Image (cartoon, rainbow, N blue to C red; front, side):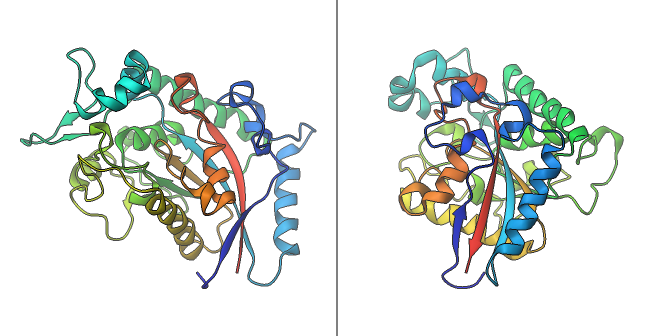
Length: 309
């Protein structure tokens, strides 16, 4: 990536583009995933517009379309709904469960806990995202060829459910992933880190065993080196992570136009202060108020980003 590169968000294609748009009105999985054009051939028109924008740019400009989806409901989300956000932040988030709901997990013989699984509702939400893609494909929606995910189990499982038998083979069928569809697990796709027991990821070896079709970003450690029990990641650090992911995608896949990312929580939420367009790219498509309505927690949104050097 060239020095001093910048990212710009291109509005006007999707209902979620409007900064005043109400996520509750739009819904988690709107018709055409929010595409405003409802005319026949709308996805073909969209792709023609993206091609035209790319050809109109200055030398060195590049455009990519991102399909961003937040994970389905996890057991920690169910606990948040049960106790309310203030009580969750002040007390329950530091524990592993309440005797009824378990949102932390032991692994191997360690007493360290790790991130929560999807609830039955969360699985249903991921299945709804899967069905939405199946419904849109006959209309010509561009299918991503590059996939990124947070390493948290809830995000990985949501991606797996969403894309199985679309771009991912069913693991039970023992079929290799098509080489044109790349799935990368990246630390920098995870949410604001620290404090909550549900935010500590599992070891790399556990992830590799349970998600064998996915690859790891370079430098991915065996144990979680991001999470700490007593401190929460700063906004500046989240900003830097958000930009590094975009830099990485543009550097590694310069010719790919369409990418998907399954995110966990407010992954890029700090970005509006330092990089407004990148922040809107993430936040507007990842469920708005993340805790107010868990029915929106498997949301899919589509955004465009234009990089300028």
